[in-house]
Amino acid sequence: MKAIHRSALNAMAAAMLLGLAACAGMSAQEKCTAIGAGAGAVGGAVLTGGSTGGTVGGAVVGGVVGHEYSKPCRG
Image 1: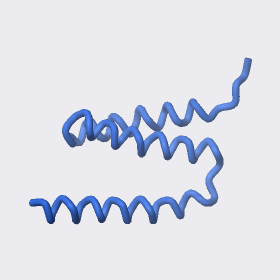
Image 2 (image 1 turned 135 degrees about the vertical axis):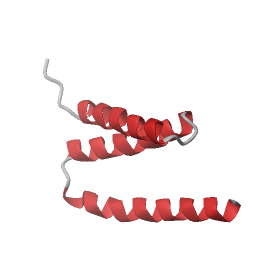
Image 3 (image 1 turned 90 degrees about the vertical axis):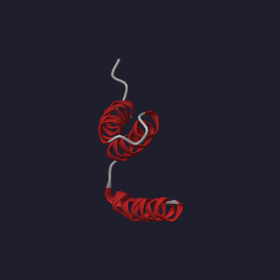
Image 4 (image 1 turned 45 degrees about the vertical axis):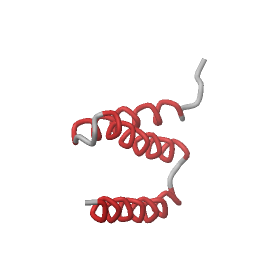
């Protein structure tokens, strides 16, 4: 069981590193959205014990927060 868990974590880490290469041409707002979605997915998975709904919900909320955070202040 530990070997499967370790292999899954290694595969996820490799996918994340490869995914970072795709961020080279992104705007600052797109990068913040992607970072927020990733952090939200991890947070949602941790808080819900790895459920799919919690992971997806966390990614959505994190993406929205990252997107809104990166907008310039209009006031």
